[in-house]
Length: 502
Image (cartoon, rainbow, N blue to C red):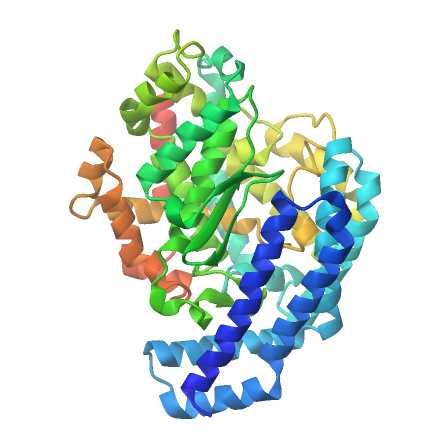
């Protein structure tokens, strides 16, 4: 046995995980309701196969032989062995029966969530969700940490803890709350036109045109409809995105599309050398993915959605094209009015349609609830009441129903407890990466002229191509010369409010 044998074993696990991604994509886009139970068993079988391959004696022997061959240096081979060793150690702590039960439950829970969301019936979904939360608590106990939430967050953002999150949230709250209050006190921009009838085919056409201009490659991807937007990759050559369109709400589908295209560009541009390697194989979550972390992935989606897509500069360049797609609906709307409307600060129920200023308050709320669920401070059946109370405290709005409240997000049905903080971490990283990129030759000039290739190439060189071979902190230091820093994000939001209120 040697390094080549280790790599071969990881490649086979990656093949299984990519197949699981195909099944996940199908179940969330195409699969009929009658396929739920069979799909749950298929997913459980393949998940357990991947786990058995990763935790087998043969893999342990291959890892030891690979370690003996490559040593403990810092080259890619040594990093690969170290990463696999660390992740397999965590995976082994989680009882096999928990992994199997969670895999089967996630498929059934997703369908139960879709039905409950459509019918506004939390009570029907609660028993399934409660089973998932109990499994998550068992995982947290198995992995360990100073706080039960540490294990959950650490699965998605290595090195992040509940305590560190509180520091980050504190910095953001101190800046965001006054900005939200300031924006709310200013005259509200015109927005009556946002709910006119915008035919969905034209929405998709414009959204995809801009996504391709940003760099999403449709020769290696496709767009489909879903209940909750997501991106998923099967290989570097097949990276799919989805969105959710409503005829009477134009921004929702297009901005979600650009968000997912940001994820898609990351996956499409991981170095081909990392294909079927540990650098595109997450053994903790048993997931085929190429990002340094979920937060770094969100940094890319939020960058293209917000730093680029919600900028005044972007709409100065592309509003004429949007008008050409909707000549009647936008005939009486100026470019400035449209830009102000898509950036309007409006505390709302729905996270994925929230403005930039209130978005992180949605995330902090979910993170607080998750931490309390993991510590046992609240029970699953209490979720609607807790959710509604926190929405009132945080954003001063009354939630009218559970569909627009606790049932709006898909994450818990998949057991993704601990993933919500990565959205806020992604926001912070996006501004940090964007500011550093604009200081390098050609990027700012490209953005000013509608040429997104310089920014695309900067992200490919400094972030995307490395896959999981660098930690989030290493990626930030390489791209920005410093670790995680909230200052650029706060500066971006402050500048946005300055612009919106003048």
